[in-house]
Length: 515
Image (cartoon, rainbow, N blue to C red):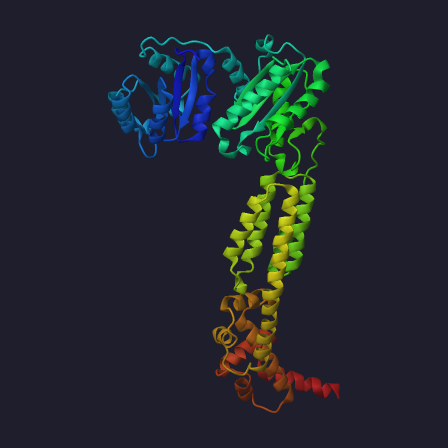
Protein backbone atom coordinates (compact mmCIF):
# COMPACT_ATOMS: atom_id res chain seq x y z
CA UNK A 1 0.00 0.00 0.00
CA UNK A 2 1.30 3.47 -0.86
CA UNK A 3 2.54 5.45 2.12
CA UNK A 4 0.37 8.31 0.83
CA UNK A 5 -2.78 6.22 1.16
CA UNK A 6 -4.89 7.92 3.86
CA UNK A 7 -5.59 5.59 6.80
CA UNK A 8 -8.77 6.14 8.85
CA UNK A 9 -9.72 4.76 12.28
CA UNK A 10 -13.40 4.84 13.33
CA UNK A 11 -14.12 5.19 17.06
CA UNK A 12 -17.81 4.70 17.80
CA UNK A 13 -19.56 2.48 20.37
CA UNK A 14 -22.69 1.92 18.24
CA UNK A 15 -22.25 -0.95 15.76
CA UNK A 16 -24.94 0.36 13.38
CA UNK A 17 -23.27 3.78 13.22
CA UNK A 18 -19.89 2.18 12.44
CA UNK A 19 -21.42 0.05 9.70
CA UNK A 20 -23.22 3.05 8.26
CA UNK A 21 -20.00 5.06 7.96
CA UNK A 22 -18.08 2.11 6.52
CA UNK A 23 -20.57 1.83 3.67
CA UNK A 24 -21.39 5.50 3.26
CA UNK A 25 -18.43 6.14 0.94
CA UNK A 26 -16.49 4.28 -1.72
CA UNK A 27 -13.48 4.84 0.53
CA UNK A 28 -10.80 3.37 -1.70
CA UNK A 29 -12.12 5.16 -4.74
CA UNK A 30 -11.63 8.44 -2.86
CA UNK A 31 -8.16 7.48 -1.65
CA UNK A 32 -8.99 6.46 1.93
CA UNK A 33 -8.97 3.11 3.69
CA UNK A 34 -10.48 2.12 7.04
CA UNK A 35 -7.74 0.34 8.96
CA UNK A 36 -9.66 -0.39 12.13
CA UNK A 37 -12.60 0.19 14.46
CA UNK A 38 -12.76 0.89 18.19
CA UNK A 39 -15.73 1.06 20.56
CA UNK A 40 -14.20 3.41 23.16
CA UNK A 41 -11.32 5.85 23.68
CA UNK A 42 -9.09 3.40 25.51
CA UNK A 43 -9.34 0.82 22.74
CA UNK A 44 -8.74 3.58 20.17
CA UNK A 45 -5.49 4.69 21.85
CA UNK A 46 -4.19 1.13 21.67
CA UNK A 47 -5.07 0.89 17.96
CA UNK A 48 -3.54 4.29 17.19
CA UNK A 49 -0.24 3.14 18.66
CA UNK A 50 -0.40 -0.08 16.64
CA UNK A 51 -1.93 0.99 13.30
CA UNK A 52 -0.67 4.59 12.97
CA UNK A 53 -3.77 6.12 11.30
CA UNK A 54 -3.76 9.53 9.62
CA UNK A 55 -7.32 10.42 10.62
CA UNK A 56 -9.57 9.38 13.50
CA UNK A 57 -13.35 9.78 13.30
CA UNK A 58 -14.52 9.75 16.92
CA UNK A 59 -17.84 9.93 18.72
CA UNK A 60 -17.87 12.52 21.48
CA UNK A 61 -19.89 10.41 23.95
CA UNK A 62 -18.13 7.12 24.64
CA UNK A 63 -17.57 4.78 27.57
CA UNK A 64 -14.25 4.58 29.50
CA UNK A 65 -12.69 7.68 27.86
CA UNK A 66 -15.03 10.29 26.39
CA UNK A 67 -14.36 12.31 23.24
CA UNK A 68 -13.07 15.44 25.01
CA UNK A 69 -10.49 13.58 27.09
CA UNK A 70 -9.61 11.43 24.10
CA UNK A 71 -8.83 14.55 22.01
CA UNK A 72 -6.59 15.95 24.75
CA UNK A 73 -4.59 12.74 25.01
CA UNK A 74 -4.24 12.36 21.23
CA UNK A 75 -3.16 16.00 20.80
CA UNK A 76 -0.43 15.51 23.41
CA UNK A 77 0.85 12.14 22.18
CA UNK A 78 0.14 12.36 18.43
CA UNK A 79 0.06 16.06 17.42
CA UNK A 80 0.00 15.24 13.68
CA UNK A 81 -3.02 12.96 13.94
CA UNK A 82 -6.23 14.58 12.67
CA UNK A 83 -9.50 14.07 14.56
CA UNK A 84 -13.05 14.49 13.25
CA UNK A 85 -15.74 14.57 15.95
CA UNK A 86 -19.20 13.00 15.68
CA UNK A 87 -21.80 14.74 17.80
CA UNK A 88 -25.50 15.02 18.54
CA UNK A 89 -27.27 18.38 18.72
CA UNK A 90 -27.14 18.50 22.53
CA UNK A 91 -23.36 18.00 22.83
CA UNK A 92 -22.20 21.32 21.37
CA UNK A 93 -20.50 22.52 24.56
CA UNK A 94 -18.34 19.39 24.44
CA UNK A 95 -17.68 19.95 20.73
CA UNK A 96 -16.16 23.36 21.44
CA UNK A 97 -13.74 21.73 23.89
CA UNK A 98 -12.65 19.16 21.30
CA UNK A 99 -12.06 21.88 18.69
CA UNK A 100 -9.91 23.73 21.20
CA UNK A 101 -7.94 20.50 21.68
CA UNK A 102 -7.05 20.08 18.02
CA UNK A 103 -10.06 18.46 16.35
CA UNK A 104 -10.34 19.33 12.64
CA UNK A 105 -14.09 19.71 12.59
CA UNK A 106 -17.29 18.11 13.83
CA UNK A 107 -20.21 16.39 12.08
CA UNK A 108 -23.72 16.13 13.50
CA UNK A 109 -24.83 12.51 13.48
CA UNK A 110 -28.46 13.25 12.52
CA UNK A 111 -27.35 15.11 9.37
CA UNK A 112 -24.37 12.92 8.43
CA UNK A 113 -24.27 12.25 4.67
CA UNK A 114 -21.62 11.08 2.15
CA UNK A 115 -20.81 14.53 0.77
CA UNK A 116 -20.37 16.09 4.18
CA UNK A 117 -18.22 13.19 5.39
CA UNK A 118 -16.01 13.32 2.29
CA UNK A 119 -15.54 17.10 2.49
CA UNK A 120 -14.57 16.87 6.15
CA UNK A 121 -12.12 14.04 5.43
CA UNK A 122 -10.48 16.07 2.67
CA UNK A 123 -10.30 19.04 5.03
CA UNK A 124 -8.37 16.81 7.43
CA UNK A 125 -6.07 15.59 4.62
CA UNK A 126 -5.17 19.19 3.83
CA UNK A 127 -3.71 19.48 7.34
CA UNK A 128 -1.43 16.44 6.84
CA UNK A 129 1.89 17.56 5.26
CA UNK A 130 2.91 15.64 2.13
CA UNK A 131 -0.17 13.38 1.98
CA UNK A 132 -1.76 12.98 -1.44
CA UNK A 133 -4.83 10.83 -1.93
CA UNK A 134 -4.37 7.83 -4.23
CA UNK A 135 -6.74 5.21 -5.58
CA UNK A 136 -6.53 1.45 -4.98
CA UNK A 137 -8.41 -0.26 -7.82
CA UNK A 138 -8.67 -3.74 -6.27
CA UNK A 139 -10.13 -2.47 -3.01
CA UNK A 140 -12.40 -0.14 -4.94
CA UNK A 141 -14.02 -3.03 -6.84
CA UNK A 142 -14.27 -5.11 -3.70
CA UNK A 143 -16.07 -2.26 -2.00
CA UNK A 144 -18.58 -1.96 -4.86
CA UNK A 145 -19.44 -5.66 -4.57
CA UNK A 146 -19.64 -5.54 -0.77
CA UNK A 147 -21.96 -2.53 -0.75
CA UNK A 148 -24.25 -4.27 -3.22
CA UNK A 149 -24.31 -7.59 -1.34
CA UNK A 150 -25.13 -5.85 1.96
CA UNK A 151 -27.88 -3.75 0.41
CA UNK A 152 -26.24 -0.33 0.67
CA UNK A 153 -26.46 0.00 -3.12
CA UNK A 154 -29.62 -1.11 -4.93
CA UNK A 155 -27.84 -1.65 -8.25
CA UNK A 156 -24.46 -2.99 -9.34
CA UNK A 157 -22.89 -1.30 -12.36
CA UNK A 158 -21.65 -4.48 -14.04
CA UNK A 159 -20.00 -2.53 -16.88
CA UNK A 160 -17.29 -1.49 -14.43
CA UNK A 161 -16.25 -5.15 -14.04
CA UNK A 162 -15.82 -6.08 -17.72
CA UNK A 163 -12.02 -6.11 -17.53
CA UNK A 164 -11.96 -7.93 -14.18
CA UNK A 165 -14.54 -10.57 -15.12
CA UNK A 166 -14.26 -11.26 -18.87
CA UNK A 167 -15.82 -14.74 -18.77
CA UNK A 168 -19.47 -15.82 -18.68
CA UNK A 169 -19.54 -18.18 -15.69
CA UNK A 170 -19.47 -17.25 -11.99
CA UNK A 171 -19.54 -19.00 -8.63
CA UNK A 172 -19.15 -17.81 -5.04
CA UNK A 173 -16.76 -19.78 -2.82
CA UNK A 174 -16.14 -19.04 0.86
CA UNK A 175 -16.36 -19.73 4.58
CA UNK A 176 -17.61 -18.14 7.77
CA UNK A 177 -14.44 -17.32 9.71
CA UNK A 178 -16.13 -17.73 13.09
CA UNK A 179 -15.48 -21.45 12.69
CA UNK A 180 -11.76 -20.72 12.93
CA UNK A 181 -10.74 -20.74 16.59
CA UNK A 182 -10.73 -17.17 17.87
CA UNK A 183 -10.48 -15.86 14.30
CA UNK A 184 -6.73 -16.07 14.70
CA UNK A 185 -5.21 -13.59 12.26
CA UNK A 186 -2.25 -15.82 11.46
CA UNK A 187 -4.54 -18.78 10.72
CA UNK A 188 -6.72 -16.60 8.48
CA UNK A 189 -3.64 -15.29 6.67
CA UNK A 190 -2.44 -18.86 5.99
CA UNK A 191 -5.90 -19.85 4.80
CA UNK A 192 -6.10 -16.94 2.36
CA UNK A 193 -2.58 -17.71 1.09
CA UNK A 194 -3.49 -21.34 0.42
CA UNK A 195 -6.66 -20.35 -1.45
CA UNK A 196 -4.68 -17.90 -3.58
CA UNK A 197 -2.19 -20.70 -4.30
CA UNK A 198 -5.07 -22.79 -5.65
CA UNK A 199 -6.03 -20.03 -8.08
CA UNK A 200 -2.39 -19.65 -9.11
CA UNK A 201 -1.85 -23.38 -9.63
CA UNK A 202 -5.03 -23.75 -11.67
CA UNK A 203 -4.43 -20.51 -13.58
CA UNK A 204 -7.67 -18.84 -12.45
CA UNK A 205 -6.76 -15.19 -12.54
CA UNK A 206 -10.24 -13.74 -12.59
CA UNK A 207 -11.44 -13.57 -8.99
CA UNK A 208 -12.07 -11.08 -6.21
CA UNK A 209 -11.42 -11.74 -2.53
CA UNK A 210 -13.66 -10.03 0.06
CA UNK A 211 -14.26 -10.24 3.79
CA UNK A 212 -17.90 -9.32 4.47
CA UNK A 213 -18.80 -7.82 7.86
CA UNK A 214 -15.40 -8.77 9.22
CA UNK A 215 -16.44 -12.40 9.34
CA UNK A 216 -17.25 -14.01 6.00
CA UNK A 217 -14.39 -14.72 3.59
CA UNK A 218 -15.66 -15.01 0.02
CA UNK A 219 -14.20 -15.39 -3.45
CA UNK A 220 -16.11 -14.41 -6.58
CA UNK A 221 -14.70 -16.71 -9.27
CA UNK A 222 -15.08 -15.97 -12.98
CA UNK A 223 -14.19 -18.65 -15.56
CA UNK A 224 -15.17 -20.25 -18.83
CA UNK A 225 -18.18 -22.56 -18.79
CA UNK A 226 -16.03 -25.31 -20.31
CA UNK A 227 -13.91 -25.30 -17.13
CA UNK A 228 -16.86 -25.80 -14.78
CA UNK A 229 -16.82 -29.55 -14.21
CA UNK A 230 -13.04 -29.75 -13.74
CA UNK A 231 -12.98 -26.70 -11.46
CA UNK A 232 -15.57 -28.12 -9.04
CA UNK A 233 -13.63 -31.37 -8.82
CA UNK A 234 -10.34 -29.51 -8.26
CA UNK A 235 -11.79 -27.22 -5.59
CA UNK A 236 -13.22 -30.19 -3.67
CA UNK A 237 -9.94 -32.09 -3.75
CA UNK A 238 -7.85 -29.03 -2.91
CA UNK A 239 -10.18 -27.99 -0.06
CA UNK A 240 -10.08 -31.37 1.63
CA UNK A 241 -6.33 -31.72 1.18
CA UNK A 242 -5.03 -28.21 1.87
CA UNK A 243 -7.65 -25.95 3.47
CA UNK A 244 -9.02 -27.92 6.42
CA UNK A 245 -7.21 -26.38 9.37
CA UNK A 246 -9.99 -27.19 11.85
CA UNK A 247 -12.52 -30.05 11.87
CA UNK A 248 -15.39 -27.58 12.33
CA UNK A 249 -14.74 -25.81 9.03
CA UNK A 250 -17.27 -25.85 6.22
CA UNK A 251 -16.63 -24.19 2.86
CA UNK A 252 -19.57 -23.39 0.60
CA UNK A 253 -19.54 -23.10 -3.17
CA UNK A 254 -22.67 -21.94 -4.94
CA UNK A 255 -24.32 -23.02 -8.13
CA UNK A 256 -22.97 -21.31 -11.25
CA UNK A 257 -24.58 -18.16 -12.59
CA UNK A 258 -24.03 -16.35 -15.88
CA UNK A 259 -24.44 -12.66 -15.04
CA UNK A 260 -22.78 -10.66 -12.29
CA UNK A 261 -26.01 -8.80 -11.49
CA UNK A 262 -27.41 -12.11 -10.15
CA UNK A 263 -24.74 -12.24 -7.47
CA UNK A 264 -26.88 -10.80 -4.64
CA UNK A 265 -29.68 -13.32 -5.21
CA UNK A 266 -27.16 -16.18 -5.23
CA UNK A 267 -25.35 -14.74 -2.19
CA UNK A 268 -28.58 -14.44 -0.19
CA UNK A 269 -30.28 -17.68 -1.22
CA UNK A 270 -27.46 -20.08 -2.08
CA UNK A 271 -24.51 -18.99 -0.01
CA UNK A 272 -24.90 -17.03 3.22
CA UNK A 273 -27.71 -19.19 4.64
CA UNK A 274 -25.63 -22.37 4.18
CA UNK A 275 -22.44 -21.22 5.91
CA UNK A 276 -23.70 -22.35 9.30
CA UNK A 277 -24.68 -25.84 8.15
CA UNK A 278 -21.63 -27.64 9.49
CA UNK A 279 -24.14 -28.85 12.09
CA UNK A 280 -25.59 -31.08 9.35
CA UNK A 281 -22.29 -31.83 7.62
CA UNK A 282 -20.14 -33.54 10.22
CA UNK A 283 -17.97 -35.41 7.72
CA UNK A 284 -18.27 -32.93 4.87
CA UNK A 285 -15.96 -29.92 4.41
CA UNK A 286 -17.28 -28.51 1.13
CA UNK A 287 -20.97 -27.96 0.53
CA UNK A 288 -21.99 -27.45 -3.10
CA UNK A 289 -25.39 -25.72 -2.90
CA UNK A 290 -26.05 -26.65 -6.51
CA UNK A 291 -26.97 -30.13 -5.33
CA UNK A 292 -28.91 -29.04 -2.24
CA UNK A 293 -32.68 -29.51 -2.37
CA UNK A 294 -34.96 -26.55 -1.70
CA UNK A 295 -35.73 -26.46 1.99
CA UNK A 296 -39.24 -27.46 3.01
CA UNK A 297 -41.05 -25.00 5.28
CA UNK A 298 -40.92 -26.18 8.88
CA UNK A 299 -44.20 -26.21 10.82
CA UNK A 300 -44.21 -24.37 14.12
CA UNK A 301 -44.04 -26.23 17.40
CA UNK A 302 -47.48 -26.56 19.02
CA UNK A 303 -46.74 -24.43 22.09
CA UNK A 304 -50.34 -24.27 23.31
CA UNK A 305 -50.65 -28.04 23.47
CA UNK A 306 -47.24 -28.29 25.17
CA UNK A 307 -48.13 -25.77 27.90
CA UNK A 308 -51.50 -27.46 28.44
CA UNK A 309 -49.67 -30.75 29.03
CA UNK A 310 -47.39 -29.08 31.56
CA UNK A 311 -50.32 -27.45 33.31
CA UNK A 312 -52.08 -30.82 33.49
CA UNK A 313 -48.89 -32.49 34.81
CA UNK A 314 -48.77 -34.80 31.78
CA UNK A 315 -44.99 -34.57 31.77
CA UNK A 316 -44.18 -37.70 29.78
CA UNK A 317 -46.41 -36.57 26.91
CA UNK A 318 -44.71 -33.15 26.96
CA UNK A 319 -41.30 -34.87 26.79
CA UNK A 320 -42.42 -36.94 23.81
CA UNK A 321 -43.52 -33.73 22.05
CA UNK A 322 -40.04 -32.25 22.44
CA UNK A 323 -38.29 -35.34 21.11
CA UNK A 324 -40.61 -35.74 18.11
CA UNK A 325 -40.17 -32.09 17.12
CA UNK A 326 -36.37 -32.28 17.41
CA UNK A 327 -36.27 -35.30 15.09
CA UNK A 328 -38.65 -33.56 12.66
CA UNK A 329 -36.67 -30.28 12.68
CA UNK A 330 -33.34 -31.98 12.11
CA UNK A 331 -34.82 -33.95 9.22
CA UNK A 332 -35.81 -30.62 7.58
CA UNK A 333 -32.52 -28.97 8.65
CA UNK A 334 -33.72 -26.15 10.85
CA UNK A 335 -30.94 -23.61 11.46
CA UNK A 336 -28.74 -24.74 14.33
CA UNK A 337 -29.13 -21.65 16.52
CA UNK A 338 -32.93 -21.62 16.06
CA UNK A 339 -33.20 -25.30 16.95
CA UNK A 340 -31.00 -24.99 20.02
CA UNK A 341 -32.77 -21.86 21.25
CA UNK A 342 -36.19 -23.47 20.79
CA UNK A 343 -35.20 -26.62 22.68
CA UNK A 344 -33.63 -24.59 25.49
CA UNK A 345 -36.81 -22.52 25.78
CA UNK A 346 -38.99 -25.66 25.95
CA UNK A 347 -36.72 -27.26 28.53
CA UNK A 348 -36.70 -24.06 30.57
CA UNK A 349 -40.50 -24.01 30.78
CA UNK A 350 -40.58 -27.74 31.48
CA UNK A 351 -38.05 -27.40 34.30
CA UNK A 352 -39.90 -24.42 35.81
CA UNK A 353 -43.00 -26.61 36.09
CA UNK A 354 -40.99 -29.00 38.30
CA UNK A 355 -40.07 -26.36 40.89
CA UNK A 356 -43.02 -27.29 43.10
CA UNK A 357 -41.56 -30.79 43.57
CA UNK A 358 -38.47 -29.59 45.49
CA UNK A 359 -36.22 -30.47 42.53
CA UNK A 360 -33.00 -28.45 42.06
CA UNK A 361 -34.20 -26.88 38.81
CA UNK A 362 -31.45 -24.26 38.36
CA UNK A 363 -28.75 -26.92 38.48
CA UNK A 364 -30.68 -28.97 35.92
CA UNK A 365 -31.12 -25.99 33.62
CA UNK A 366 -27.43 -25.08 33.66
CA UNK A 367 -26.39 -28.68 33.02
CA UNK A 368 -28.81 -29.19 30.12
CA UNK A 369 -28.06 -25.84 28.47
CA UNK A 370 -24.31 -26.43 28.68
CA UNK A 371 -24.70 -29.82 27.00
CA UNK A 372 -26.91 -28.39 24.24
CA UNK A 373 -24.53 -25.51 23.49
CA UNK A 374 -21.60 -27.94 23.38
CA UNK A 375 -23.08 -30.20 20.69
CA UNK A 376 -21.51 -29.55 17.28
CA UNK A 377 -23.38 -31.90 14.96
CA UNK A 378 -27.00 -32.93 14.36
CA UNK A 379 -26.40 -36.66 14.91
CA UNK A 380 -24.88 -35.97 18.32
CA UNK A 381 -27.62 -33.42 19.10
CA UNK A 382 -30.37 -36.05 18.85
CA UNK A 383 -28.38 -38.37 21.13
CA UNK A 384 -27.84 -35.59 23.67
CA UNK A 385 -31.51 -34.58 23.66
CA UNK A 386 -32.47 -38.24 24.06
CA UNK A 387 -30.21 -38.45 27.14
CA UNK A 388 -31.61 -35.23 28.62
CA UNK A 389 -35.22 -36.30 28.12
CA UNK A 390 -34.52 -39.77 29.53
CA UNK A 391 -33.01 -38.08 32.58
CA UNK A 392 -36.13 -35.93 32.96
CA UNK A 393 -38.39 -38.96 32.76
CA UNK A 394 -36.31 -40.63 35.45
CA UNK A 395 -36.61 -37.56 37.67
CA UNK A 396 -40.37 -37.48 37.16
CA UNK A 397 -40.80 -41.16 37.98
CA UNK A 398 -38.82 -40.74 41.19
CA UNK A 399 -40.12 -37.35 42.33
CA UNK A 400 -43.36 -36.33 40.68
CA UNK A 401 -45.16 -39.69 40.94
CA UNK A 402 -44.18 -39.95 44.61
CA UNK A 403 -45.60 -36.49 45.18
CA UNK A 404 -48.88 -37.47 43.55
CA UNK A 405 -49.17 -40.45 45.89
CA UNK A 406 -48.63 -38.17 48.86
CA UNK A 407 -51.36 -35.87 47.52
CA UNK A 408 -53.77 -38.80 47.60
CA UNK A 409 -52.83 -39.43 51.22
CA UNK A 410 -53.47 -35.78 52.04
CA UNK A 411 -56.91 -35.86 50.40
CA UNK A 412 -57.77 -39.00 52.35
CA UNK A 413 -56.62 -37.26 55.52
CA UNK A 414 -58.92 -34.29 54.79
CA UNK A 415 -61.86 -36.59 54.09
CA UNK A 416 -61.28 -38.39 57.39
CA UNK A 417 -60.61 -35.29 59.54
CA UNK A 418 -63.01 -32.78 58.00
CA UNK A 419 -64.65 -32.21 61.42
CA UNK A 420 -61.40 -30.87 62.91
CA UNK A 421 -59.79 -27.47 62.61
CA UNK A 422 -57.82 -27.77 59.38
CA UNK A 423 -55.76 -25.34 57.37
CA UNK A 424 -53.23 -25.70 54.54
CA UNK A 425 -50.25 -24.73 56.68
CA UNK A 426 -50.94 -27.35 59.38
CA UNK A 427 -51.55 -30.09 56.81
CA UNK A 428 -48.26 -29.24 55.05
CA UNK A 429 -46.43 -29.60 58.37
CA UNK A 430 -48.16 -32.88 59.25
CA UNK A 431 -47.04 -34.40 55.96
CA UNK A 432 -43.76 -32.47 55.73
CA UNK A 433 -44.97 -31.35 52.31
CA UNK A 434 -44.29 -28.28 50.17
CA UNK A 435 -46.93 -25.70 51.10
CA UNK A 436 -46.83 -23.91 47.74
CA UNK A 437 -47.16 -27.06 45.70
CA UNK A 438 -50.12 -28.17 47.82
CA UNK A 439 -51.79 -24.81 47.21
CA UNK A 440 -50.96 -25.07 43.49
CA UNK A 441 -52.44 -28.56 43.35
CA UNK A 442 -55.81 -27.53 44.77
CA UNK A 443 -56.08 -24.55 42.46
CA UNK A 444 -55.21 -26.52 39.33
CA UNK A 445 -56.59 -30.03 39.95
CA UNK A 446 -59.65 -29.53 42.12
CA UNK A 447 -60.89 -26.41 40.31
CA UNK A 448 -60.98 -24.77 43.72
CA UNK A 449 -58.70 -23.67 46.48
CA UNK A 450 -58.11 -25.60 49.68
CA UNK A 451 -60.85 -23.76 51.67
CA UNK A 452 -63.43 -24.40 48.95
CA UNK A 453 -62.42 -28.07 48.79
CA UNK A 454 -62.72 -28.46 52.59
CA UNK A 455 -66.13 -26.71 52.59
CA UNK A 456 -67.30 -29.01 49.82
CA UNK A 457 -66.32 -32.12 51.83
CA UNK A 458 -67.96 -30.76 55.02
CA UNK A 459 -71.24 -29.81 53.29
CA UNK A 460 -71.44 -33.25 51.65
CA UNK A 461 -71.16 -34.81 55.13
CA UNK A 462 -73.74 -32.33 56.48
CA UNK A 463 -76.18 -33.33 53.72
CA UNK A 464 -75.87 -36.98 54.73
CA UNK A 465 -76.56 -36.10 58.37
CA UNK A 466 -79.55 -33.91 57.46
CA UNK A 467 -81.07 -36.78 55.48
CA UNK A 468 -80.84 -39.01 58.58
CA UNK A 469 -83.00 -36.45 60.48
CA UNK A 470 -81.46 -37.39 63.86
CA UNK A 471 -79.68 -34.18 64.83
CA UNK A 472 -80.48 -30.50 65.14
CA UNK A 473 -78.96 -28.25 62.49
CA UNK A 474 -76.79 -26.57 65.15
CA UNK A 475 -75.45 -30.00 66.17
CA UNK A 476 -74.68 -30.93 62.59
CA UNK A 477 -72.85 -27.63 62.12
CA UNK A 478 -70.47 -28.56 64.93
CA UNK A 479 -70.23 -32.20 63.85
CA UNK A 480 -68.86 -31.30 60.42
CA UNK A 481 -66.26 -28.83 61.75
CA UNK A 482 -67.98 -25.39 61.89
CA UNK A 483 -67.79 -23.50 65.16
CA UNK A 484 -69.95 -20.68 63.80
CA UNK A 485 -73.50 -21.87 63.06
CA UNK A 486 -74.45 -18.81 60.94
CA UNK A 487 -71.30 -19.23 58.82
CA UNK A 488 -72.22 -22.90 58.30
CA UNK A 489 -75.67 -21.89 57.05
CA UNK A 490 -74.22 -19.35 54.59
CA UNK A 491 -71.71 -21.86 53.20
CA UNK A 492 -74.40 -24.57 52.97
CA UNK A 493 -76.76 -22.35 50.95
CA UNK A 494 -73.91 -21.16 48.68
CA UNK A 495 -72.98 -24.74 47.76
CA UNK A 496 -76.44 -26.44 47.65
CA UNK A 497 -78.76 -23.51 46.96
CA UNK A 498 -80.84 -24.30 50.08
CA UNK A 499 -80.67 -23.50 53.78
CA UNK A 500 -79.96 -26.58 55.98
CA UNK A 501 -83.60 -26.58 57.23
CA UNK A 502 -85.02 -26.28 53.70
CA UNK A 503 -82.73 -29.07 52.50
CA UNK A 504 -83.96 -31.35 55.34
CA UNK A 505 -87.64 -30.63 54.63
CA UNK A 506 -87.15 -31.22 50.92
CA UNK A 507 -85.59 -34.62 51.55
CA UNK A 508 -88.34 -35.56 54.05
CA UNK A 509 -90.95 -34.74 51.40
CA UNK A 510 -89.04 -36.75 48.79
CA UNK A 511 -88.90 -39.68 51.21
CA UNK A 512 -92.66 -39.57 51.83
CA UNK A 513 -93.47 -39.29 48.13
CA UNK A 514 -91.19 -42.20 47.29
CA UNK A 515 -93.27 -44.42 49.59
